[in-house]
Length: 88
Image (cartoon, rainbow, N blue to C red; front, side, top):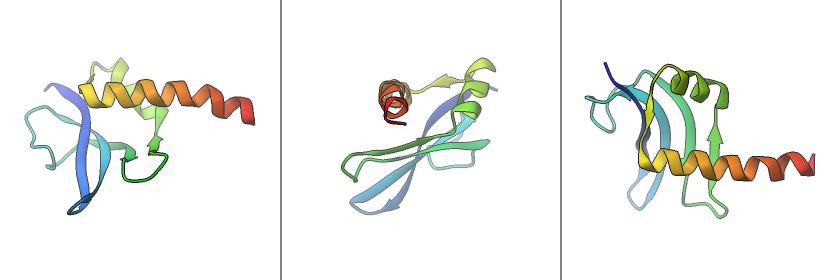
């Protein structure tokens, strides 16, 4: 079983948001998944990205591969995180 981290679409027509999920690569995009590990809402400004970093790290260490979009979101969240820590 090849586990991937990818986006699963939710929301309404023209107002999508996405769950970041760990799933078997053979499952369909919006099909069943193993675990929900985050949320991405591109319709808000600024975009809303909520990640369960401990669970994402767990899956990456276990061999899960992120999709191109998820890899981009993880990089974007990592850049934003130090700025948030400086404010605190």
